[in-house]
Image 1 (cartoon, rainbow, N blue to C red):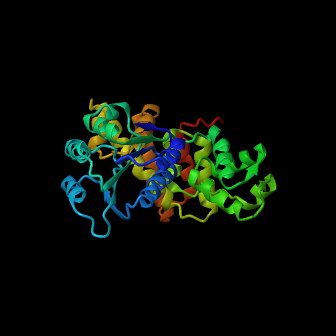
Image 2 (image 1 turned 135 degrees about the horizontal axis):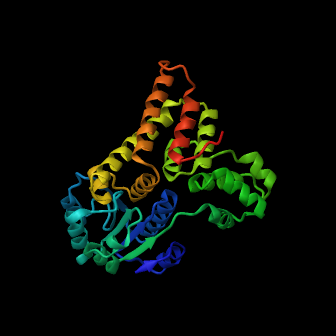
Image 3 (image 1 turned 90 degrees about the vertical axis):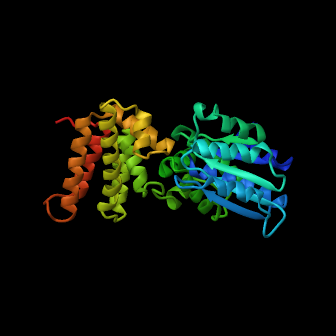
Length: 338
């Protein structure tokens, strides 16, 4: 069965399915939806929790053994499967299908994976799981939707704020839901149910933009304004220039290899598989950047990375942060008019 995220709480109060699938690319939403399932499992006596992190070397046989083994600490257990690639493969698909073909009433299975496409949802293993349990898919909160999301979360803490205050909090946290949630927790501690613009200005900093991974993500998307702002915040925070460079250079090398493979005729999906890029969100970033940037652009970006490295090590007399700005401008395709 399919459930919307907002329907999960009420559903769990009415009883449990043998399986819950939480799918999406927003870590905070995945975590909180999974937490609801975990809490309901404990309430219904599933006191033992067993977590399986699936990677390329994962032995799917251990999952079936765990499902059939008696619990050491209680009569019922929660079996949690973290599948970051979103693709179990042939062995994994068969194991998951076998697991839910005849569900053990003493087990509750929670499968957490990124957003899966229609092709995956049409697979045999997914249809078997979908029939046996509940599928909860969540979607990223776009920047335009963020004030409404913040307002809804505030209401959960009996807090209210006017539109101007909500817009400022959305701007300060810049799409980072975890940062927004943390700031709402801080505002709750003020003890004032009506949050004002003044409260936001005094309490909330640029909470979302310290993440070097967010910098690379925005650059691959071609979002020049956000990329340059994140870079400025990272510099102001005293971060060493080598830290953002390491992430950017790694993604640029990945992008270069992808562009070379596809230029030689290899299909995009096969190229990503060969490069071991399995996370759907990352796949989309690489594909999008490759459509925007020429092979020459990517090669020039990599050359800039080497110059930044030399500047950081004193082998080139230049400001590495200025060169990082140039790198972002190149990656985002920003035209600088004289």
